[in-house]
Image 1 (cartoon, rainbow, N blue to C red):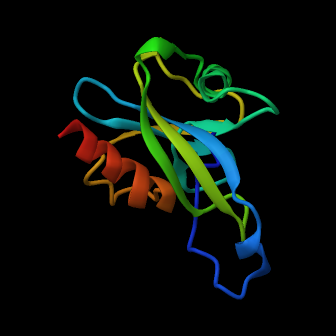
Image 2: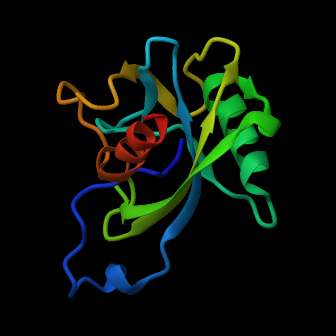
Amino acid sequence: MTDASEAAAPAPHDAGHTREPIHTVAAVITRDDGRVLLVRKRGTCIFIQPGGKREPGEASLVTLSRELDEELGVTFDAARARCLGTFEDAAVHEPGRRVRAEAWIVGILGEPRTGAEIEALAWIDPVAHADIDVAPLSARHILPAFVAARG
């Protein structure tokens, strides 16, 4: 998925802190009950937004379409996708790095299932999700922005 994942922000003296962030595209997928889908990569314990890194020259929604098909076996209508914004925090799967995710609210076609490197799915309350370990990018930025956007 998206390496729209993170951990504690690197210390200012950390050499990785000055490197260009990892650029990703992330999905905010909801159900009718308001819960949001997060995924957990194989061999990790932190849940992140579905999505991933762009291929060279790839447009955001093309990246998201490819990643959601590979990771979850679902598609979405790009014409109905809404850009939530671009957010940055520490990358959980690449220590010492930061990740910058362009987040999109998408309605999916199909039932999500684990695929590619995804080991687990979790439908969470975007406000109260203390029962699972959520990446800082999602917990501090994407989920609060989604809650504010939906009103």
